[in-house]
Length: 369
Ligand SMILES: NC(=O)c1ccc[n+]([C@@H]2O[C@H](COP(=O)([O-])OP(=O)(O)OC[C@H]3O[C@@H](n4cnc5c(N)ncnc54)[C@H](O)[C@@H]3O)[C@@H](O)[C@H]2O)c1
Ligand SMILES: CC(C)CCC[C@@H](C)[C@H]1CC[C@H]2[C@@H]3[C@H](O)C=C4C[C@@H](O)CC[C@]4(C)[C@H]3CC[C@]12C
Image (cartoon, rainbow, N blue to C red; front, side, top):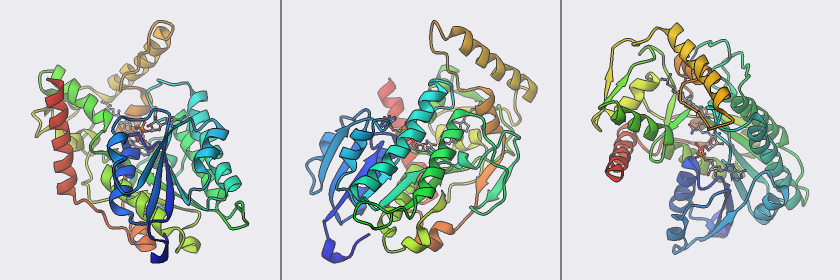
């Protein structure tokens, strides 16, 4: 991002820095970005682990704030060289209202962009999602596609709708003049399903398997491929993009990149078993135990129950028509755009990613006892 004369001069801001991905981005920056002077971590909920970071050579500034509040965002952005905007509401289970998802993901992103423009920050990296592309509502497969693969991106669910709108805002902001007259340089990273240490849904599946006597029951055909990428590699891509945006602004500005690594192409459940298997769980069935129409019926029933129970309690199971469509539609990427544009190579091999994730699940198991 800068030459050696600027060593230890840079100020970075990570929004959502206490989330699953955000924490990995924060730790990766501290390990891999020697030019960092100050790292600002902006989140609605600050984690206690931030304290341990404050003893290192880089000034770590924790900022409790809300991306929907423009003044809070502007105060955090002022004076930062780079903003990595990972904050977002990730909800495909109906826990939050569509309005709130829109407010956080779209208005929050708009606030980040405006803060960059108003305060003179020139480099903005946005964490988008594969869901900006698909799977679409028609359930059409996206088989090992890349950033240029034609695909009918049609969304109805609030989460992908919000991510698509926010990504569009970020890309359109590329080239806008920021305070001081220089152009804003933006780009968007689109992870597929992220896994690794801290992945809440993996934890949920693990606990569900324990409750079912060490078994999970196959619901999705093994032939349906679902793209997955290790969190450490996604974090590494963010760090590299942030570093290279200045030098390669003409090439990278306004671009989108899928996040990828060497994780194998598998179905969602078979992929999870790469970690849950060594932790003692078994996936029962070589074929789905329930026919698809019955799963669809149960998914629809869950929506009805969620609606009926809403006045009393929050019922938000993993299975609903949207998550079923996500898991049951092939969506995998195969691309080298990040390597060509900014020299990305995965920092963690598949074996390392797998070992680290298994170790983490085992630690979750230990702490649950
Ligand atoms: N997890 C995945 O598989 C995945 C895949 C693709 C893209 N993404 C994207 O990556 C980003 C991070 O996702 P994650 O899985 O780490 O989710 P996460 O929920 O673990 O992290 C999001 C963080 O944003 C913070 N946040 C939420 N609302 C906020 C607000 N109003 N103001 C400030 N901070 C707020 C949360 O407190 C949390 O720490 C999101 O933008 C998500 O859309 C995630
Ligand atoms: C049919 C059930 C038995 C299985 C349900 C699995 C379901 C909870 C999983 C399947 C696919 C998962 C999503 C996918 O990995 C990608 C993303 C993109 C990201 O932006 C947010 C998370 C999300 C939606 C995953 C959520 C959990 C899903 C739907």
